[in-house]
Length: 184
Image 1 (cartoon, rainbow, N blue to C red):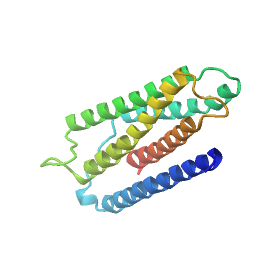
Image 2 (image 1 turned 135 degrees about the vertical axis):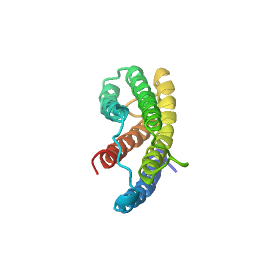
Image 3 (image 1 turned 90 degrees about the horizontal axis):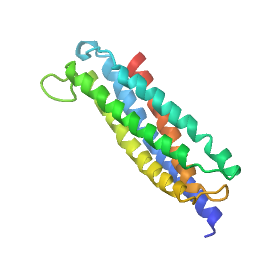
Image 4 (image 1 turned 30 degrees about the vertical axis):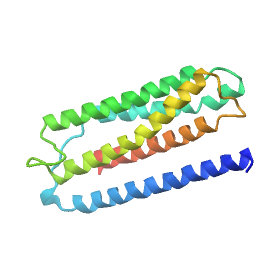
């Protein structure tokens, strides 16, 4: 199998994975909508500001990834940019955890005697997103190391491209989840 065909197969496999992840989250959001209709058992609470901060961070990180291909075309180093995106991904994770801490301080729990369906959904949705984000962080770590070693060029950047596609997907997914949690 030649390299071009292998690259196409790898991209298609990524898209199959993204569709699968989308279906999982669509089913979770569907359950969220059904459960929220049961107003009696739904405890309303305000999302912590940390989730808004993390939303801005992940959007910025995704935006920065759009500058990689033009830099590769100009044969410029992309290490700094990829490293910044990695740091922003870690900051996103940090603010998610800080948001959970604030929620538990306010009595919103995942499980247990003080838990509520609304809080449980919030934790499950945000935790599963964060677990998927770990995959993106691994990809960004690998891409950062390879970019430091100048292993990417305009003709050879598939790994970085796959990482960027996955990261953009996670960004869009987070914005949708955040909108549901904040406004629905």
